[in-house]
Image 1 (cartoon, one colour):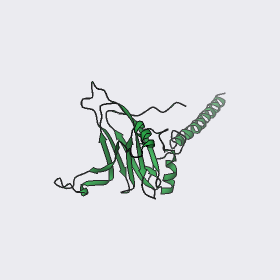
Image 2 (cartoon, rainbow, N blue to C red; image 1 turned 60 degrees about the horizontal axis):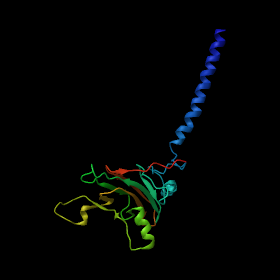
Image 3 (cartoon, one colour; image 1 turned 180 degrees about the vertical axis):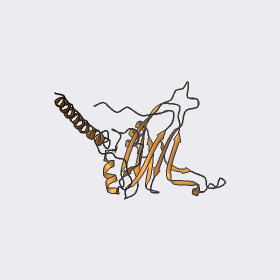
Image 4 (cartoon, helix red, strand yellow; image 1 turned 90 degrees about the vertical axis):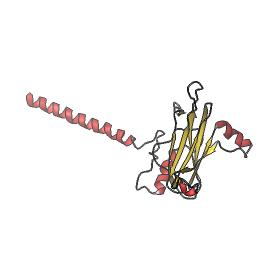
Length: 203
């Protein structure tokens, strides 16, 4: 009877291990999936540009599904765009002065990228009046080599930057654009005490 009990226990343990392994495998596989079911769009070392560009297909290419930037490097094909969205919140009683919103775009190839900052209202107005431009654009970040010089040599061409504030709350879009024919990689960050991101729509 004792031997039979041990056999039953052993079989139960083996069954439990098999069940645990079968559950754990899908969970680990999900770590490479994006929120939309797409493969993880983040660029990893050693990937070809074709693989990287294909992976980034899950990143928003228009205003409808735009959201927060991912904390990783992404690939963007030639003459294509990625869209991001954030909310700038202003409290007249506490925000004195108004907090800065900071946008930084690190890039792997000089002159490959640009980025623009738009409000929904300005985007809509630009449809009827092409002369209307963005609220702001990224420029090479000032990183002085010679503090006494104003030369462009003091700018980092691999880091585009914009910073600003306002006395009012607004929604903003950040459009990252690849200006070249080739695929290039970038890392976008949008930070600031008044920067918030919209919650994903419930499905």
